[in-house]
Length: 448
Image (tube, rainbow, N blue to C red; front, side, top):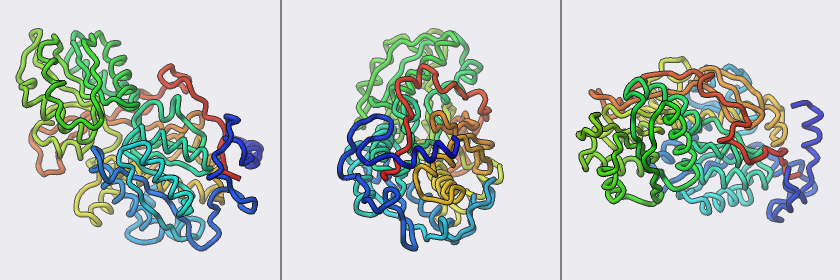
């Protein structure tokens, strides 16, 4: 983006929502004296950490909050600095952000879009948060990203895997470090082909919201391209805890693969039910019945216990990686909390550092300056290899991990093993790919 483009973006009026021409809610109009929403004029700056502290993704939210607190400690000069020491940018010096002490407020998204928006709104209006981040649900991420666009603050998405977050629902003020459903399909499909062949019948159980829908679409498309047949796609409520009634029909469907498009507590419960029904011991169509969990996490593996053994899926990051950045983060997190971090923790820690670094490089907290600093920014040293924050859609492109449940874990944390590191080039797609169509990034909104 050119400097002239930033200048154009910097004079957006408070009466219009950037890129749409719609009237802004009056609650978000900035004072005429302010250069942008919540311009931090004192000695500190406030960030808003909006995580699921209750609901089916609460375990992920708890780990996110731990990582956010660690990031703030490092930014303010505490601890060992973590990945600030391995980050390819040298802008962060441990003296806050632009010399301002970093403070934070927290909220509970409850894994509900309305609750998440209300929480983020309070952080912006009452607490003066200049950036909002967090979430472990794509429905929440999309809702809060839209609100931040209206409010004129930056949204650094947490754990959100729906294609729509940087697809049809992308916003200029929003950025995603986490990977997405398309990337999971692109990484997993070749591995599944080698393991299970090209003649398979798949049955999908899918969380009934934006993430589940786009992951189902992505995995079905990738496996059908191999020759697999999709037998059935069944949607399940996010609030479900017992999946027995959804597992039973699989037994008579002719399927020989069950794809669980579930995350967090949903995946723990649905996988447990599938094992209880004896699916892992069945032989169908002359083949051993298989289960695939396209989006995996260590926290889910811990919850599901021995049921994850041998089951394949994809993940954004894993604590066993041996690169300098990953090990620096694992040391810092482990020293503070006594156990290794999850992919959710890694993602939000990275997002906090990336925001702080963008502000430093821009020399301003103005959202439009931050947008310009992050678009098409290439970096390394944060645990996923060389990474690009693509300007066209604000999606990060980096290596993706294919993992499986360990047969013989050595500890309660050593539950997954990396079987393939899929290079970024294999999971990269054009910004106008059909799975990501239907939305426009628009222009940044500073709230000024």
